[in-house]
Image 1 (cartoon, each protein chain N blue to C red):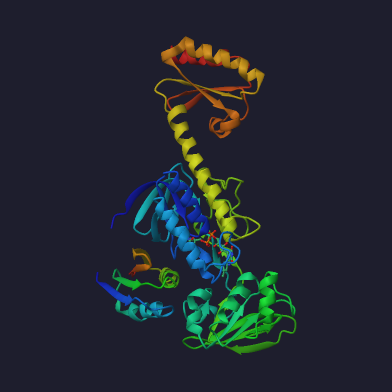
Image 2: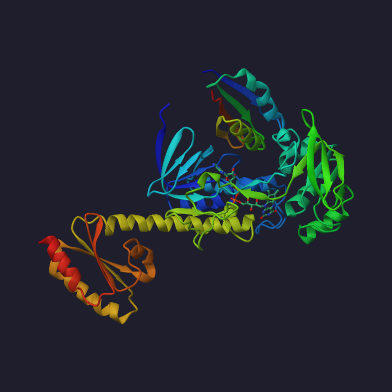
Length: 75
Length: 411
Ligand SMILES: Cc1cc2nc3c(=O)[nH]c(=O)nc-3n(C[C@H](O)[C@H](O)[C@H](O)COP(=O)(O)OP(=O)(O)OC[C@H]3O[C@@H](n4cnc5c(N)ncnc54)[C@H](O)[C@@H]3O)c2cc1C
């Protein structure tokens, strides 16, 4: 189970989600992708997209206005 | 991976204006409060550029800025935030179980504040352009991306008209598809006046979306005139839908009572049909869905949850939890019959001293405690033993019956 991370700090929507979608085919079931973001808009569309595709999502607020989104790819 | 289990007093599902307010009240009452939010804390209010009508902010405030203040206040009162979706909720028992993908949270009370989700048009091709492929529901999120471009807004309520005006600050051209006849929009008068005076806004009357077209991204929206049936393609870089919201309550179906559209009816204290489960904000059956009303609901629901927990603790410990038989006298202090019976109850207490515990319940102040014992009307007596009601004397005028039962019990 590998862990990947993506830096989307400073990027406004829709860039963070597009980055995630581009990286996604590289992940296998059980792998986790962590995206670092600081534009709050990405907290709306990335988790929603991931959940709709059936994956598990959890967000951690690293500091005020900076978040790590964890997405676990289901098998 | 085995699921973890955590315990709390109150679980708040949804971190919009209503949930955050409820959490502020619960946190301030020193209850262990956990709030679940699957997206950005702040809820739908963060989708709007300016909130003009929330009292206390005379100059208008961006939705994200206002909600950030709510969030800060909740954190100050010790509310724990879990930024993940609630996947399952078992609300029917005394212990409520709220499940996320990693953890089961066991809560004594639950406040449902899951709000709304944007309604879709249902037009052909819509699915293909959701999630940053051209269809958006959030002008503040995506406006900058459309700088110098062409967008279509669908809808004519406050949200549609206000967000369309906000978009004119970025986009070159903003067209608005309105279902009504020329000159008629559902928005408030101020917004309407400004919109009609804005040269960058162009209204397309009597239309609904028929189809979304494009390649990788949205390129064209086909509008249908509802009067003539005529189809007219409009070339766009993006399309914003503001055609209303639906309650986000699928999770609770079959447990919490709902109306035909999925909204949750509550009483004045935000209580649902399930004991210990409250609903606040846009998820409720109500007449006005705004930040100000969500805040009002949150305050009422937060306090109602606190009272429910206090009452439950009193009931479990003082009434049901005695080490000896407990006589519960449900009375109304203003009623002469109740007052005279009270002296008999006092005598009973004297007579059996160590062998019995006597608890008085004021029906006026704590009618719901009496209801838990199956008592609706004062005066009435109940005898509790081994955590169960052993005997009830309803509409009684003396203590003889209950004393006889008590005597049998203690031999
Ligand atoms: C574009 C727009 C403009 C608006 N303008 C104004 C205005 O100017 N003035 C005004 O007063 N009101 C305005 N409103 C209305 C206002 O935003 C709502 O009335 C208010 O947000 C309701 O708050 P709420 O807490 O009930 O629900 P919401 O704000 O909808 O919050 C519910 C939250 O629950 C979360 N949630 C749902 N299900 C789950 C789950 N299973 N697990 C975890 N989290 C979950 C959601 O992600 C969401 O954040 C506007 C709304 C929009 C969309």
